[in-house]
Image (cartoon, rainbow, N blue to C red; front, side):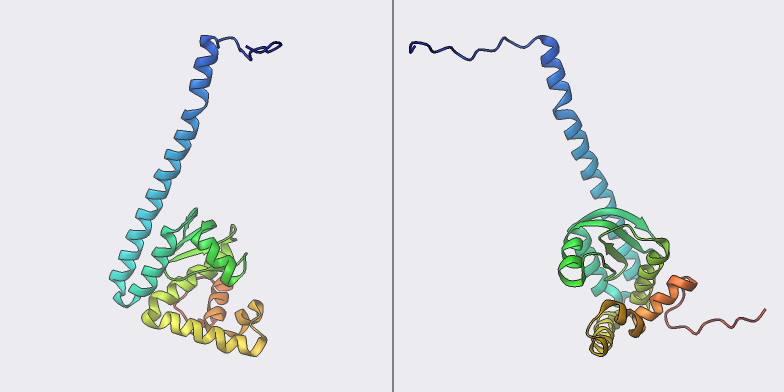
Length: 196
């Protein structure tokens, strides 16, 4: 050994230190990972059942149900259940967050079918808005995406594709906005008269 070299030797750990290290490090991480995997599996099983059920009710919705399911498989978040089978992932991470951020604006919620995605927690009123889009999807079937795109472009051309303006002009968005104020309803159905 070179002169002046002092080896860096630590005393052997006591049995209590070994036990504490062994107990405290791997198990909480393992349990946390197991809980996350189990939660993901349960959520995705519910999403599959939802997509199958909606497709059975209206087989022409298979395209948007498949798209929504595919986005769901690439996303995580807090799953919230709405009415008529609707599910919404709030605080979405993964594919749902990426689509929202890169195509729709970071705080935007979107509903491609029976499953919706939002980058934040939504109020009950905004949840009804997104739930109404799922009802529109169910009712319009294969015309949901073409109609939604047509209306977004039509309204957007009038106001420079400003989101607030599109929500005022698009028939899809005004119908969903009505659900925010009056509750869920059959899409584009005339308002009930206010008699008594």
